[in-house]
Length: 121
Image 1 (cartoon, helix red, strand yellow):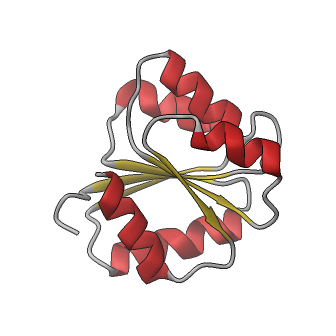
Image 2 (cartoon, rainbow, N blue to C red):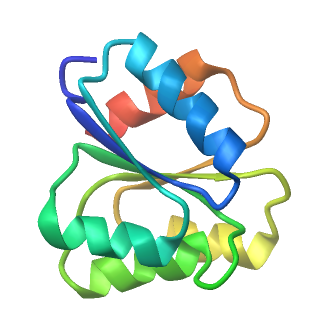
Image 3 (cartoon, rainbow, N blue to C red):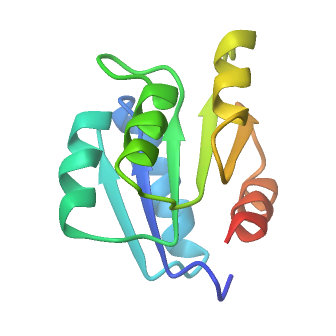
């Protein structure tokens, strides 16, 4: 976990966002920021940098893949773990084509998620 000092969580499900945030803090991540939409995450990214971004795939407005495509087009190469309860094949392919992106299905084990984040950083 040493390589991961800060995480930006992006999910429009506020309960999932709060639970994952609390778990990551309990595991010793010193800086965990929450964004309830991709648009809110973009605002945060204008001001701050993170070791890794964990984003939901299906969100209102800009979805997770569109979010990653947008930040990559802006030159942001922060590693991303994308989460989804119901991944669709075209979306998985689009996510996989982005640099430093791992795709994770829900439900997941927190240890597996931490392992995926550590591999990306």
